[in-house]
Structure formats: structure tokens, C-alpha cells
Image (tube, rainbow, N blue to C red):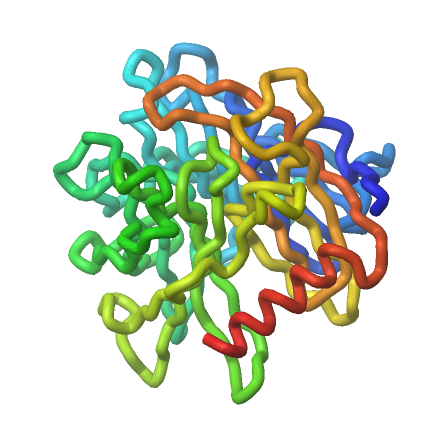
Length: 354
């Protein structure tokens, strides 16, 4: 299986969308938010690839450290970037969801971006990995957060909140839709439960349309990082009612230690495609502890199949305020009918069975 990088630098927490035949890529850089644009999801290496810095805070200012998991969204005719950031001196516990907004219809206009600060209406608790989804003509934000009033850093739940508009959440609508309660979500003997990295998935399956949230379970700093699935039962049910969500009892996608890498699939995002075209993912070639800084154990790739799937292993971070950087390299796996095609078919099969 070939392994052709689609980017020349490490790209942890990759998020890719397509708009007007252009692919936009964002990823974690830690101290800034960049947006890359390419005519092909396969190649962000060429000189034709556009790259801008949408925002880079001055050192020592609020929200200037540990900028993680930026997502670019086009909402109500306006471009936004949702990401999380922390305060200097307060570290990881100060992570909150913050926003950028563009005054231009071109997201690559670097001068048009402005920092809005935290997403209004969210409770004042640790939260990361926010994504935005549209369901039944309403906007919702789904994110990973510590339980309200609990700063022990032993539990991360998935929360859903309705948005009055892309910049304001309706505080009274907040609800928890998922907790790490299944054995495979707590492989360390139950000491820590992690649900994070939510992303919306809508796709045609046997018997109709599937709607739900793919999320990541377990620690992103381990090879046990795994994709789980929440099915929105629909039928007019209120998505803010936890009973409207049904969790798949087994993982959607996980690595198998005795089969070799890649390891630790997680924090997925999906890009609809019209053919058996590329799929992008991140993974690790080694099992066990994460590779140290400067190693080459991280790979990302693409393969044919049902959707543009990004399986990505996040930066190694212990959720307590310090990180050990690891190598993430977007890459292109090009063997037709190979591993990624099998992964795509497996995911479709599991969703059909769900």
C-alpha cells in the first residue's frame, strides 16, 4: 500500500470541507488558526495550494494557548471557524469554545477574519471539539465537555445545545446526549471515560437515511482511541431529548493490535463524494505508547469508498495542561480495494446493521 503525503507538515485534528468545488483544510497548530485551500483533496503540497493565517493571538493574551481542532463552517451565508483555546497561566482547565467570523465570502481572505471570543450561551465549563450541525431546520452545537460542576478531569461527555444563530447558543437547551458508560469506552479499568470529537453523519443506507453522530472514545493519547456511533432516531423526536439518541453497543471502528497498524482511529469527519473516490484519514503505524516528537509513526491517508472519511489520531495531550507533540502526516493510500476500501465498506455495513 503506497503512502503519499497530501501535506508537507504534520496535520493533527484535520477538518476538511468542500465548498464550490474547493476543498478547505484546517488542523491544530497550537498557536494560530490556518486555512488551506486546494482544488483536490488529494494534494495540499503543490505550489497552487492557498494558505492563510486566519488568526494568531499575541503571546500572553487571553485565548492564546493550546488552540485545538478548528472547524470551518459556512452558516447563514457567513464563514465561521469554531475551535477551542485556553488562557495562559490557567492551562487545560480553561479550554472553552471560541469563534472566528469572516466578513468576506472568500474564506481565504485573511484580512476579513475577526476573533469573536467564546460562543455565547455555553456554560462556563471545560469544553473542546465543538462542531455545528443542522437538523430539522435548526442549528445545534455538539461538543465534548466535563460534567457540569466536575473539574476532576476523569469524565468527558457529549453535550448538545441549540443555537439561536451561529454566534449564540440557547443556554436553557443544553443536554448531555452521551457518556462513556460501555466497557470498550473505558478500557483503563473505568478510571477515565472519554467521549469527544463529535461529527455529524447523514448517509443513505438500506431502508432509508441514516442520521447520527460519530464520536471518539478513550484517550487520544493511546492506541485504544476508537470511533463510536450515536443514531438519531428521528421521527420528529426532539434531538435535545437524550432518548432520541441510541448508542451503538460496539465500536464503529477500532484498531486491531494483532493485525498491525494503523492504530487509534478517531475524531472523524465525512465529505460526500459522487464516485468511489478518495477518503482521507489519520492513523499510527505503531501500537502501544505514542511515538515521541520527531518520530515518523503518524500517517494519514485516503482510499476509495462511500465518503470522505477522516480518521484521525489527535495530538498526544494528557488533558492536564501539557502536551507531548507527535507526528501527524496527511497521506494518500492508493491501493484500490485495499485497507481503506474495506474500512469504508465495513462502516456502511455496520450502519446498515445498526
